[in-house]
Length: 317
Length: 317
Image (cartoon, rainbow over all chains, first blue to last red; front, side, top):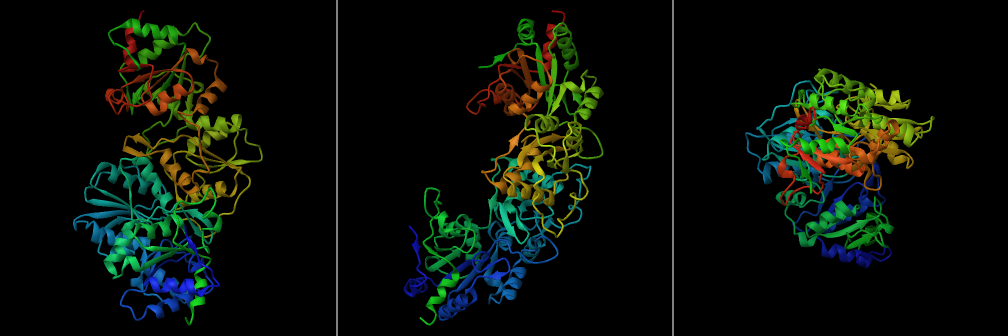
C-alpha cells in the first residue's frame, strides 16, 4: 500500500526530507508539462538543494527520457546539453553532470559497461542527440543522420554483412526508413555476437503536436523481424542499466535515495528495480484511478502526492 | 499424424487426385524458389488442369504473399497483374482471376466484406501494387506513394485528425517513414471507428538480396504505439478472411479442396482454418526436422511430400 501524503500536513514531507539524501527526478510530468513549469517546482527544488547542502552526497539527479523543444522540427535532439538548455529556459538550477538521459546512459553503457572494443563501431538508428552523446564518450558509430542512410527508397544493391559493427543501438528517430531498418536487421541477423541495444522502449511520447510513436515503436520492426531468439537490451528506465550508469558517475546511497516520477511502468518501476524509495506525482500520465480498483497497476509506489509543489509546505521547517 | 507420401508409389498420389477437385497453391517455395522453377512443377500443374478439365469447379487457385521481381528496386509491386507476369515468365499457365494476393484480398475485403462507405477513404502504408488493387476495386485512398507523405523528415506542422479516413491499411512499404507512421497512428488513435487492417503479418520476407523485414515488421510500430486495446485485422494467410475473398469470386467445395504450401504457420494453418485438406512440400522454408521431435510444430499437415514435382508419377494414370 502506498502512503498518500496529505498536502496540508508538513510533518509527512519533513519525514521524507529526513529519510532521503538524494532525490532523483523524472522531468516531464513532474517538474514541467511541455513548456509549463509545475506550480511550485522551482521553489521545492531550491529547498531540497539547501536542505541537502551540508551532506557530501549528490542531492539532486535528473533522469530524462525524451525532452521536447520548440524547434522547426517535430522533436529535437535529446542530448544532455539540450536538456540543460531546457532547465535553464525554465529557471531550474541544474548541471549537465546531474542529468541522465537514456541516450547518455546508452553511450556510457557501450563505453564503460559492455566495453565495446576499439576496432568495433555501433550502427545507430537515432538522431543527432544520440550521436553527440556517443561522440562525447568516444564511441565510434555509423548510420544515424548520415545522408547516405537517410534516403526515400532503399538503394538497389544488397546489404553486405559488416563484422566491424559490434552493436546496433536504436533510439527515437523521426527519419526512420526501410533502408536503416534493413541494415540494422542484416547486421544483427548475420552476426550473433553483434549486441542489440535500445535507448528505451517507450511505445509513445507526448509532443506539443500530440501523441506520437516513441522509441519502442521505432524499435519494433527489428524485434518483430528478428523474433524472440534475439532479445533487445534496453538501457533507459525502468532498466537497472540506467542506474548502473548513474552509479558509475555519482556517489550516493540507494537506501537513502528517492525516485520521483509520474509513470508507474517506467519511473516507479525503475526506482523499485534499483532498491530506491519511490514517490508518484499525479501531474503527469498517472491518475488517482490508476492506483485503486480492479484495474489498478501491480506497480505500487511507496508514496503518492498530488504535485511536487506540495513539498513547499516544509518551507522554513 | 501426417501421411508422408512415397514418391515411388503412384497410388498415393492418385488417391489425392480422386479426392480433391480444387488445388490451391502457395507459390514461392512450392512452384518456384526465387527465379528458379521447382523441378517438375509445370508438368504437374498441366496434369492437374487436364485431370480437372471435365469438372465445372475451378481446378487451380493461387495464393501469393510476396512476389519478388528483378527490377531496379529492392522489391516490386505485388498486384495480381505482376504475379501474372511472373507466372508467364516461368511458363506457368494461369489467369489473373485465379491469383489471390493479400493486397487484392485486402481490397476485396474493404469493398465487399466491410463495405467501406463511399464517403470514406483508406489511409495506406504500402506500395503501388496495393494502390492498383484498391483502384481496381473502386476503393478511395490517400497516403501510399503520394510524394507529400514520402519525405525524409516529418513536416513541422501537426497532424489533424481526419474523420473521412474510415480505415488504415498497412502492407509492405520499402518507403516507410516516421511521418506515415505518425499519420496512421493519429487516425487510429483519434477515431475508434477507424478500421485497422494489414495485408499480412509476415515478420520477414526472403528477397534476392537476402532476408529483409516483412509487412509484419512495417506494421509493428503501429501495434506497439496503439497497444493491445487496438488489435489489427490481418487479411492474408493464415486469416480466414483471405478464403472468404476467394469464395466471393470462385465456386468450389472446401471439402474437396487441398491447399499446398511450404510454411506451416501461414499456408498450412490457412488451409486448416478454412476446413481444407493440406499438403506440405519440403522445397521451401520447412524441413523434415520441423515435423518431428520435441520442437515439432503443433500445426500438422494432412499430407507431406518432398516436392510438388513428385506428383509427376501419376502421369498417364
